[in-house]
Amino acid sequence: MSHSAPPAGALVPVPDPIPLRRVLVSVYDKGGLDRLAVALRDAGIEVVSTGGTARALEGHGVRVVDVAAVTGFPEILDGRVKTLHPSVFAGLLHRRDRTDDVEVIRRHGIGPIDAVIVNLYPFEAAVSRADCTPAEAIELIDIGGPSLVRAAAKNHAFTAVVTGPEQYDDLVAMIGRGGTTIDDRRRLAARAFERTAAYDAAIAGWMARHAGLVVAPAPVPAPLPGAEEVPLPSRFALDLRECLPLRYGENPHQSAALYAPAGSRRGLAGLRQLCGKELSYNNLLDLDAATRLAALLDTPAAIVVKHTNPCGAAAAADAAGALATAMAADPASAFGSILAVNRTFDRACAEVLLAPGLFVEVIAAPAFDPAAVELLTTKPTWKASVRLVEVPAGDPWEPTHGMELRSVAGAILAQRPDDCCDDPATWSVATRVAPPAELTPALDFAFTIVRRLTSNAIAVCHGTSLVGAGIGQTSRVDATRIALEKAGDRARGAVLASDAFFPFADSIPLIARAGVAAIVQPGGSKRDAEVIAAADLAGIPMVFTARRHFRH
Image (cartoon, rainbow, N blue to C red; front, side, top):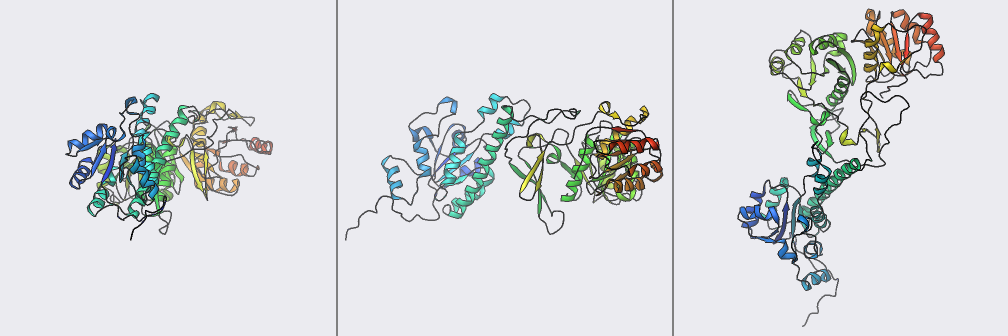
């Protein structure tokens, strides 16, 4: 009995797993290529390659077929064109269960390619360097590599794709068991599309900056109120990678991890933990609050944070002096806190924390003196628990296009960070009497601290030390009352800062009875005249900044 051939386009069965008989290898990162070469050579797999990859493989004993021998066309344009050819892409993209596809590649003498092993030019690493020129960046925009990866991933029903040395061991295991299964290829394809998406996002971000579509955040000091602001981009993409797995989130039943833009090494993305237990989700939120506030202060400063709010803050001649004052501001709240200093954490700082009854969860600084590390890890009773964390200086917002991002259900909120300093020279005196000049540093300090308290927020500061904070209240008079109660007798002669205007004059009598020497607030209420009149009646000088600092 004779059998007629299946009609064009008919489906035929394809074995699973699919053996690896012919692969294409083109990698920038040669790491791990030695162990991959051994597996390819021992399995007798034909290897198609070019350039530096071909030479590296031959150095490991692999016989290589040059891509030019497959395409019949030489590599041209300094390597910009070498694999972009039907003899390569038809070998990747033909559907092996379709008789018409199989007939087409047979008729044109095109051999199937069972796997693509490709990693891309290091674009992200290159553009993160300060000395990377636009010409260099453009040359590192890979064209052939992503095309090969996308083609193989699209045709993952029949073709495997490997995009990094970390996958070589899995591929070697697949070779050893006779080939790649559909589950293998589907998983590899998902990783491949993740990689090309991240690569394209990095290029898009760089190109937006290169074209002037994204401008860096405003410099310090901030522009005057009403000045033109840099527009937000209409769209942007981020490649976020897990950089720190966490035991759990805010509560034990919530899984969590820290993600950061690929290549970012600033802010908390670049933290280096020197010792202590692993960091938690809540630790990182508190670290963010502490380090961002410390960075706003030019003089040596220490910030003590509990539940994302400063409960102690001070500036002094040196970091140790600032730390001693900050820890004494609210000792009850400071127990089990997160603290940050904006200078090297030295032995004198460590000695401050050796006092009996003190315990902190995390200490953050730009750097730690070895003598301080030795003291903290050998002397206190909590030595095994405390985490010491180095957080690098620098603008952490560059990888996010100069934007601070915050998640809400189903969406992302974006805004320019409120990290620029205010200039007291631009403030206006609202009352008949101006504050004494010697109170200007205290007013400046208080208005800097209040911006990192949760709204509604009031900060009472004696000199350059926080002595009372009212945070997260639904009325400003309640926030004022709490801050003054925290300050107690220390409110007398202190200054008081409000993150937003006083909607009523009801806080002024409380402030007057506490003996506060001056008030700084944004102003802008329709009842400003009533508030000013109450301050004049109480004899309290008040200045308006014209800039609000809500923090929700």
